[in-house]
Length: 327
Image 1 (cartoon, helix red, strand yellow):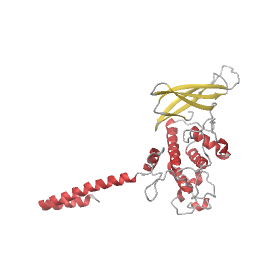
Image 2 (spheres, one colour):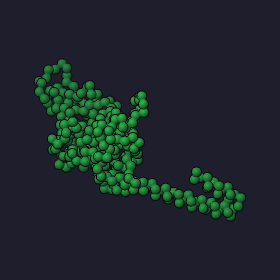
Image 3 (cartoon, one colour):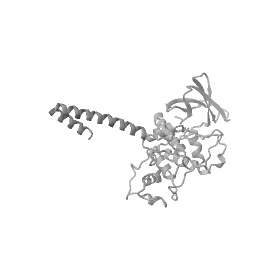
Image 4 (cartoon, one colour):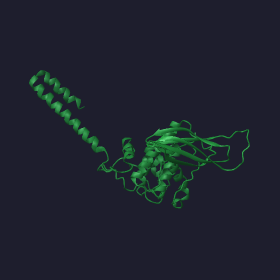
């Protein structure tokens, strides 16, 4: 549409050289002004209040994908408490959950599944989708804030709905593990194990604290990255085929200024087992280590005692090592 006036100016200009020069000049000035305006609008669209936030890059990425948006003033408000409406929408969009393949006898409504979620709101469709994947309680209230443990639980349910996989039962040191509700504890541990969630410097998760918009965005971004590396591995472990290795641990120590020695340790049923790194997937500054057991020689007899096994690889120091799925 913007090209039409310019073409019209040029056609008139062929009829009158002097007037055409004036029109073409005006058109050129208009086009230049338009480019400046578009450039300004593009830069203004970025959230102005996330500078210095530890999740700034993740938030920008989610904004580009349409997962998160700002308020009426274009701000993201990273330190604000996340509401259920915002959290459910973020998980559904970030993990690309949908209703494709689900057949309905009538059009689904949010009010069919929840007591306090109204129909026709900006978040209604996300809650409808969440009712199939995220194990949302019927009594949920969209305007209430989400705690860190509840957000972790619903995020994990969303991840699990996207792909079948099994992780070795993690053994993590969480100083406030006793504060995590039993029904959410496994979800929190597995998100920490997969590198989707993080502990603070005191190794605390703070499960009862309201999660901030920044923290939630960071976890959704990492969950999306986890699903990408799961797909890239091409051979996710199935829940029906658990690994014999348990209590997997990862240690990283500098070898040189540019290379780290990364050691993976695990507990095996007996000395006949071993462990090896099957593959490494590099994505978004992380190195996802896929480990698998080395099976024992079936012709030998081993003492049935728990045994620690380990293996080491060398990774550039610019990457953060993360234990991923056994292939």
